[in-house]
Length: 123
Image 1 (cartoon, rainbow, N blue to C red):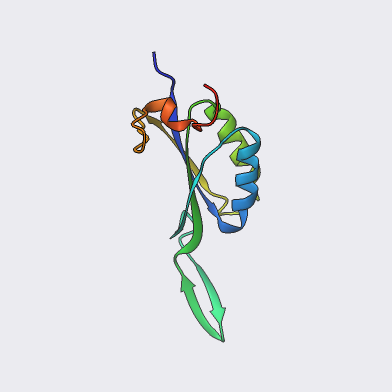
Image 2: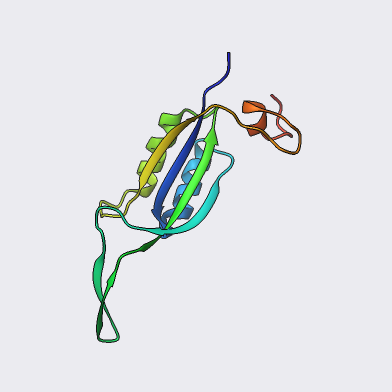
């Protein structure tokens, strides 16, 4: 019987990235992928003034943080991320969790949980 694997995707403010990375590391998350993205949620956009001209901003800079986990409880990752990201203002972020059915380490051909672990760690 296989071990459950999950992809956790988190979109949040760029300025919260380091706090998120530190908090996830404390609960045992070992690897992350970070992508700088732009988007908007329910706030849709805001009007700002730039050099006296009113401009409507529709896209906001964000980061997308993704990790695949198997050993760390997914609920622990969710709660940790929520605590690290919370400001109470719109734009704190969204978390999505998907079940992963297959993972392959290209270099070695290892699959599933073996593909996720550090090769230098004992099993």
